[in-house]
Length: 602
Image 1 (cartoon, rainbow, N blue to C red):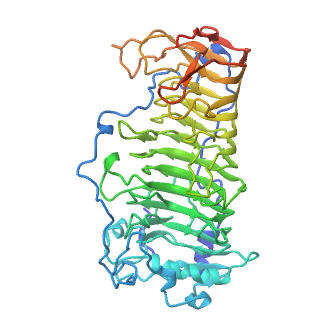
Image 2 (image 1 turned 90 degrees about the vertical axis):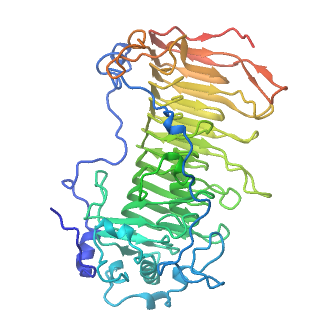
Image 3 (image 1 turned 180 degrees about the horizontal axis):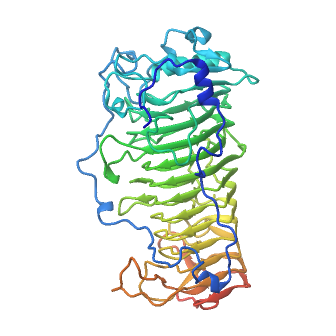
């Protein structure tokens, strides 16, 4: 059995060996993210056979239960708590020891009594590595270890000491000389987030793998016990103003992160990077782990997981985000201040169990130039009977930040080899809340969407959208819904057109319906091209009296593709539109009727 006790001031040589040692193939067999299956057959006989996706098709789409939609009781606190202990940051201008909400207050790095290299503790630096264990100022009996009892302490706060270690490292870093701030294995308590506002730094713990267990004593776990969860809820926060030069080349690697509380008013994240250029988050497992269990409606509704915003760009690689209330990964920008941002890559990720009362999306993209690949996004569920969300992937425009600013519009986005399943909303959702803007130049390659509560793919706004080799099955409603109609904007609003699907595989959808004959793909849009593809319904009629654990579920997808007219426009001023310039060819079916154009009855 591994010991959970560690000596605080281990030798710097041991820290170097522990933190910088490369991973070995024998250390773990787990793979980060999603590995797409190889050699799938699109032959209809294979799709409905034992080798078909998720055969024998006894799964149900993920939908909330009645208990999931109930309101929170007792109500969560209306405001953040006042800090009274010694761990609270220094007094503000009024002499109060508190995290003063949105009011200005000194930061640890501004009040630590040192600057630059004068912050460096003797013996803590070797070979471009700063060992944070030299900087912890813990009371006797609270030495660094993996003991979870530290989470209930009232006199431990590692934030000030680590801030000093970061300032030491920053004094040594240059564009040609990266400095690592090394976190030996153990559990770190952060009452306020670390704020590494410096270039060319790496914050790193011992190697973390996809199958690393919570609290593994051989890893570094950052535990956020926020003094003020409304303003400083997470573990790492870069908040460089948009008009200032960015923080450059910050790397955050090999951590387990426990978030215990968060904001209910203004969104903030466990790792929140604003105005951070060419930055990386890698080998990180982030979990929402409150001290006592919480119903989804009681969770802090505006707590995100990993956020790149305010012009931030870079790489998010090898991450697991589990149970965060609002969103797993959030990418956004301010176009006027950060035009045409370089590409952000999100790869090898797993986003799961995002459960809260606002958004609750796995990955949300509100910016341009993004690549997402090899990600699995599943079991994300929005709680609240009138709320919208719970999607696996949510690509959406964002309204401007005020006068003089334009909207943020997603464009030039590629989603590759990723799997969106068992989400309470839609697997892949594209929307716009602005009449004159919509996502554009969006490409999906090798994407799968299954057993989502609503649709496999739903596009309410988008142009120049391409799907190559899309698979959609077992969803609550249509596998793909192209929905140009709206009642939120005038009939002239830009919505959905120029969508191409190449070789889609769509089967056994509409599991939430018990009657009727419905299409796998429903088209209420123009300029749509479908080239090839397979459409099937595998099995027989559903038996409502049968055992749901063993009964083959076929759903009500009895049609392959249906085009139909639609209404769009504000109430009282709606216009009927007809599908035009749509081209459908090369489709094969089994248990589905051929593609059709429905007679308009509106």
